[in-house]
Amino acid sequence: MNKDFCKRLALGGLIQGCFHNLNGNLQTLSFHLQLLYLKKAFISSEEISSHIDKAFLILQKIQKQVKGVLDRIKEEREGPWDLKEVLEEELLFWENFLPFKHKVNKEIKLLKSDLKVKIPLNLLRGILCNIAYEIFPSLKEETNLKFLLNKNPYPRIVIILNKNLEKEVKKRLQKLSRFFKNWVKLKIENTKISIDFYE
Image 1: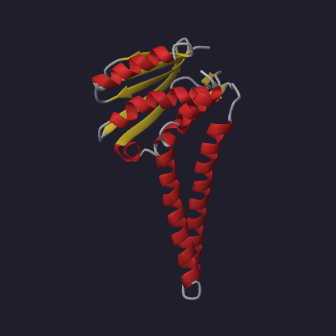
Image 2: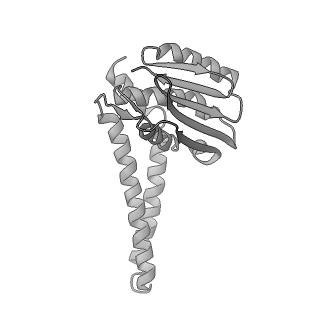
């Protein structure tokens, strides 16, 4: 698997959702700035301050989103990487897929501190993104996802769902497990997926 392919995997099919979110933030930022411009002679300093604060918060959010996308493209080092931090970034990236953002409850629990994996970051993100691509779009409303991070004996992510995975999803995950077998071991059950990262 070459690095260019890993970059494409990491970006996945989420660019549309990512830019949808960026566009929404830009529109909100534009609204606050236009309001300031139109009403600057008539509104109180407290109201002006409130709009300025909101505009800068939205601007910071946009900068963070753009940085996240650029980091995915540029990063080629092998780590080691903090597994919890990378997983949190992946979940934030997947929130560009709006049904996942609004309808799925997510919780990360770290069972072992300082859990690191040594693997090219684009490959790590690509693996997580591909597994997520098979699972997240099929999740129904009010699905609870728990991510348990541990080491036994390898660094491990266990994804626990409160609903059964669809049969087709399980089949696709099984195919994916063969594709990524040099880097991770996937164990797929009805309501649980274990991902062991070889060291």
